[in-house]
Length: 143
Image (cartoon, rainbow, N blue to C red; front, top):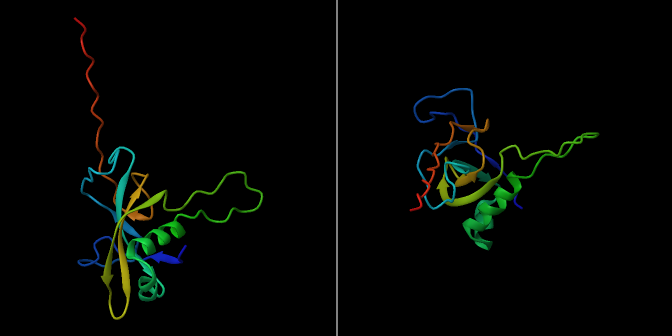
């Protein structure tokens, strides 16, 4: 696992600035290659900041680095004393869909990621996932 963090962004960053910042935003497109997309899985776009990214990319590929970062981000917080309930990961159950490289301001490099999430709405991401309704199959009439 690689220690990393999400880059906080405003909702309409290039156009307006505000004090409220979140980790990413729900993607509005449909991803038909993801099974049950829009019913139980949605896609979130985010940026991940990694310390020493260029050194890590010399040893392994971008997808390997991104998947190790996602493993670090989905760790649940440490359980407090005398609590019965198991802690849940703050961002939900995330899995890597795609990863891209992005140059930031100055020498900063980010990883743009598309993550598959199992929550239609999460307080750490802007917006909500698109809904897709399941089509019920008609019953066949026997002759």
